[in-house]
Length: 273
Image 1: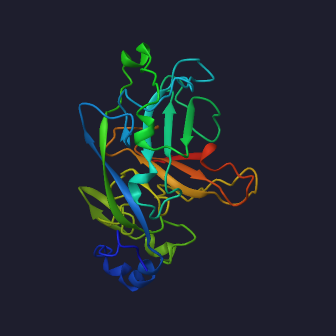
Image 2: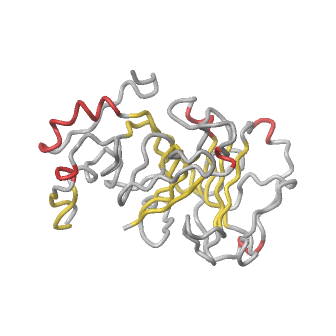
């Protein structure tokens, strides 16, 4: 049974070839949240937002730097899990952040430098307002690699498995069937379905299934060796964030055992076209 935040939602109309699998999709749909971005003049360091120059960076923590070039990392996003009312997400509260080096442009998992995540599990906006924060380093203020700032509209949606995922009840041959779309000669009927939020638009999200662009590649926890849990993904469509091409930067974490690092050391992968 879906929680109150998502109980009113329904899957969108499907291509005729997918209709026999509608009930199966409904039975495995997960509550999740789209993070739709809107340009804004300024963003609060105590709220979920993408880009800009005002992240939550306590003086005691220092600004993260690239291990390779030693330049300060650009702020990409921060997500306050309290925004999601404890529904369908990895954590009920806490602030999760991501910083990246556009100079070195690393891609995980092969590159081990140039990106940093920070996790504040006990974050709350009211006490945080009394924390001394660092300003953005001048070289980032003057950098050409600027993103945002974007405010974030949190939208509930029903997440279904990405293409070719093991949880997907639709046979791979049917998923690969192609139809015309948006002036392109062919497009896969499943992932192109408007409202499934897979490849019809690449929008950031928290919770649910990973929206794979290519074949699924969930990372395994280095401690327990089990597949890590999908946490969130940054999409390129309304952020302008491009890693090689349009797609997603995915975040995973594991909490299968007490020794697993969770969001303190998330696992990351990217996929694009």
